[in-house]
Image (cartoon, rainbow, N blue to C red):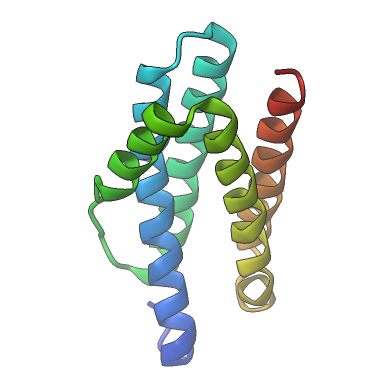
Length: 133
């Protein structure tokens, strides 16, 4: 990891890296649950993107993290209880929040701008799908 960054930035990067890894499992789990082929495809593409994001951040941190299943378990449980619309709203909001969290990191690591833009696209993609329900 770049040794000139602060401990606060290091923790933020590691948190983001973990979040991206966890999102891969979450999107794959949701793809397995949904019946709609279009949404399944969206979730699988988002999983692929999140994996790419984790790899970009890993190059910065130099840390190898393992994905945790807890996010996927919670989201699929909420999906089963509260339904698709609730989950899609949560996911869309989460993607937009992730994009905001990357703003300060982009100043230090311009390669993170690609991730930030993807998170905005993810939020918009889910929001668009939700509007069609």
